[in-house]
Image (cartoon, rainbow, N blue to C red; front, side, top):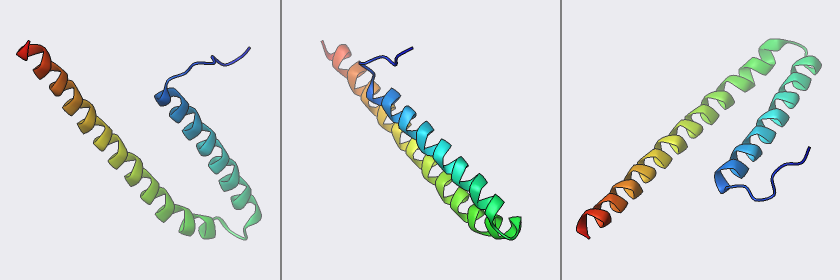
Amino acid sequence: MRLPREISAGAASRRRLLADMSIAIAIAVLASLLTAGVGVVAFLALPTLLVLLSWITIEAAVRGVRRRSARSARVAKIVER
């Protein structure tokens, strides 16, 4: 089974994010298995997780604002005609 050749930029972005998240999970599991204690991993992982979640939330909010702005601009063009 092959992936579709022509995909949207959003779908490509989601696939890259999924690949990055999978690699991050694999690294986190490996790190937790190799460290002396889970506390060490948690101490490093918690701030990283908070920063990444904040980043993703801010990007989603900005994307939503841009999408609403573009939609309202299209509606205004249609109304002007």
